[in-house]
Length: 94
Image (cartoon, rainbow, N blue to C red; front, top):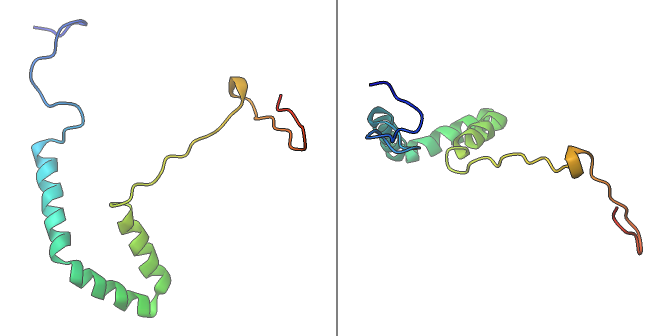
């Protein structure tokens, strides 16, 4: 039977639920990282001795998996135009 607009969905995963393979891969990678935490520290220290910039880049890249980047937000005035601001004693913002 063809799906038609207005029909109720039956079964399937809930939105934002990863499939089993994705979940398994993420779990395996998590275990790999946890098992090598001490090694990763040693590796970063060795890299930093000859190339501190590269070691910092690696740390920043790894941080993205723990601290998500903030989304950029554009602030605009009325109708999407520029923001008009008057600064001064007793000034009114129009």
